[in-house]
Image 1 (tube, rainbow, N blue to C red):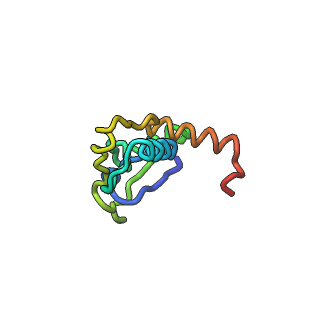
Image 2: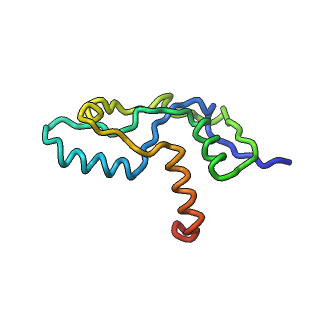
Length: 117
């Protein structure tokens, strides 16, 4: 019997993922370049479904089992994306893709397996 991982909901809900290093760089960028009172959203303005993210994680870690959606569980908010237009208009852009971030995190986990324990 092949291993199975279950995700909540249909897997269709859309999410935006931003690497922590990109967030830190955006904060420094804003400290150096912005002094208005209005808030500024920080995001990557790229979204993917929970199922696509789960499959990407599986690929990065070498998981070859099945990923199944449990539609009996809630999807949550159908779509969560930031409007980062103001920040992008100032010239800032994230550098690290979701795939690159996952690869980096997984390499770190393999090198330091007891860090999170």
